[in-house]
Structures are given as structure tokens and as C-alpha cells.
Length: 305
Image 1 (cartoon, rainbow, N blue to C red):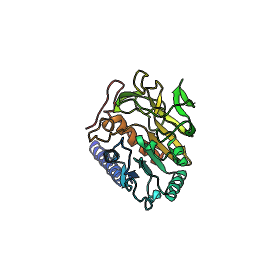
Image 2: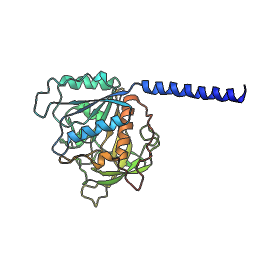
Image 3: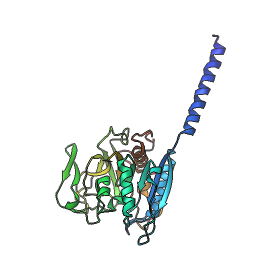
Image 4: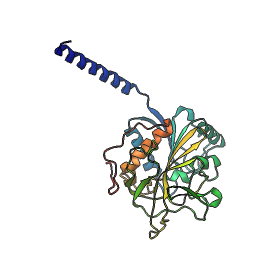
């Protein structure tokens, strides 16, 4: 084979591989996500949150997102009955009225059979009397949750510790704080820095719940000199196994009722990246996304405009 022919052969082969790869990428099916929103407590802003969550997932290029808004608080919820099986994962941005019993049961079955669930921030305040939901979320706050709801989860001496001491959920005022990886080999965390700065958020503390089949992915801590600082390594990113279903739970992402975009906690590249990776994992059990170059460091936050 002469050099000119060899060059043309290699060039054509590379073009063919590129073309086939491009067709495969274009034809790749996206992950179907149902984002449920529509109610929140007086301390949060579901309109801003859900708009940002939908945008964050779509920006990853992997997800097809449908947003479903529930009836408003106090309105008739009897017709709320999503077809869960149409979706690879459900992202809940919801803190409001109970769902119909039949809807709860169908969601429980969806999760037991291998569905995916993403729980963001105040969603873990929801449904304090729905036992299956408490098991799915692992931990929750407020809504009357006391020792009867289960232990607090601590990270001490390199391992998860269940703490049955008294105390209900609290959080310090919004501030920047370091996030520390506790499961660096988990698909969601793999490749992320061992510590990174998260921007201007509430650090949920002293959450309680069943904590069954729960894996702590990352923790954060506030010193006791801060109001409501516990000094403990509080779990802020975690996964829960529920039947065959996978749950990604992040306590990050607070938006106050009077806030409008941009919101630092949602612009934080650490929040964006872990929400995208956590949603992919909940839906598929794997993570294909690379860590972005603008990911925050141990010393500096990183906000994406």
C-alpha cells in the first residue's frame, strides 16, 4: 500500500467512525424524568426552584423533562395520578398536601420495581405520616419529626453512626460551607474533589428518619459558635435503596420565598453537577457525565451564570 493510498484509507476510516459515532450520539434515547412540583411551605419558593431544576437537567443534554404541577394547597387532589412507569426517574420538588392513597400506593410499587427518585432540599420535609416515603427518603426534617421517627445520622471516625439522642431539625443561616466526600468511589461522587465549597445555602442538620439502606455520599458541618451549628458532620448527599428502586437525596438547593433568580445555591456548579449526576444514577444506576472544569475547589465557590 503506497503512502498516498494509506493516507486516504486512514482518513476515510476516521470519517466513517466519526459519522457512526455521531449518529449513535444523536440517536441515543434520553432519560425520561418527571419533575413534580406545585406546593411548598412559606419558607420556600417552588416556582423558582422547579424552573431552575428543569433547566439544570436539560442543560446536561441527557434528560427529557416533563414538569407536572399539582393542584394548589387545599384544592382537590383526587385527580392527581401520574403514570409513573412512563419515566425513568421522578424528581420531587414538593412539600405540600397529601396525595390520594391510590397514588401513594402506585408510587410505592413503581419504586419497589426499580424506579428512580430524586429528593431535593425541602422535599424531605414532606409527608411526615407516609411511612413508605420516610423509608424512601431515609431522613427528613420538621413536620413534627422527633425521636419516634428514627435516628439522626452522623459521620464519625470514618463511618456512619446512628444517633438516637434528642433533637429536631435545624439549620444555620445561609452561608458558604465546605462539602466533604465520604464515598469517593460511588458513581455520583467519582472524580469529584474530596472537598469543595458550596455557595450560600442552608445546611440542614439533625434530620431524622428510618435511615434504612442509606449510604452517606457527602457531609458538611457548622461550628457550634454559629446559631444552630451542631458541630457534627451532617449528611447532605446520600443514596437510599428502596426495594429495587434507587433514591438520590440532596439537602442542598434552598430558595427563600422572596428570592428570584439568580440564586447562589442553585448556580453553584457543585449543586448543578451533583443534581445531574444523581439524577442519572437514580434512573440508570450509572453515571456517564464528566466532572466539569469549573467545579468548585476546596477554597473557592464556583457559580455558573
